[in-house]
Length: 95
Ligand SMILES: [Zn+2]
Image (cartoon, rainbow, N blue to C red; front, side, top):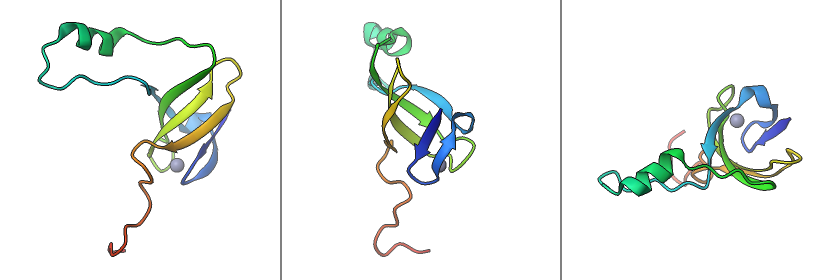
């Protein structure tokens, strides 16, 4: 399986580390809602079809990527940086 890193280009799966389900929302750190924390830590979707996942290009640029992968065919329909374009130079930024 190849994942196309937006920064590095197509790379083998062995260069990436799965970081988890991209659909989860972490409760507020001070939250004492145990049901919400229990759901965040333990509940996982197991969809048959497109799944939103977080991967890190750990053997390359180390960027965290949001990947939409079909769990039945392993076809990847979308790859992007988790926090926008992390490598884009901001206007006026130093080299
Ligand atoms: Zn990369």
